[in-house]
Length: 260
Image (cartoon, rainbow, N blue to C red):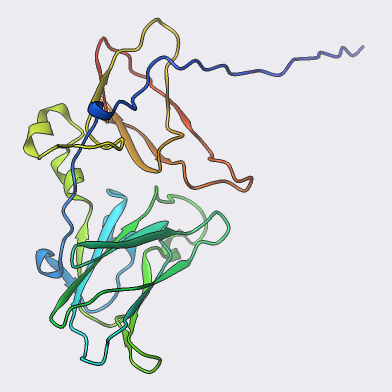
């Protein structure tokens, strides 16, 4: 004898209880952009990201300095990478950012760049949104920058593959642990109109489960009461074109919670 059981679909219902988009509710800490001279680790090649960060940080700074020839009047910088994303800076000025996709892991960016006639500091922040810790041939996986060039003309191209690079593992904010309440006064916070990194107090009402909606964010990490609760990358979509996750349950409930 067989019995058929029909079960209805489960429906998750969320109700917005507190918004964190108040202009005066956030402050930001701007991390320092290291130059070649700021770095203590140097190598005459482009090093692999994961071997450098050792799964302790998501971020690795690649830096070098470069003086163009007088004929380099309209330089273009080209960066190729197998990281998840890169942010490029030239002489502490933001140049641009780019990232891969779910299907295409390697990516490149090409952009005109303004160089002076003296030494120029190029700083590239390589980002990995979490690292693989299992799978076949894990030891042979590669992440990080693969090629960096500056093209002045069709024939004048500078290849920095075997150039002297400086490296910094992690961000200054990571090392100072600014996500902990006792360390907040160690850095300078500034008012911002964009939801940033400064902790925001929140007190959930009632006893129902509480989740943090990250759908308006880009990529980063969130902390609750000094503890990391999630790495998020909402702008990175799945094969259907949607964020893979936007809600993160807040496991810890106290009378006063500090959100970063």
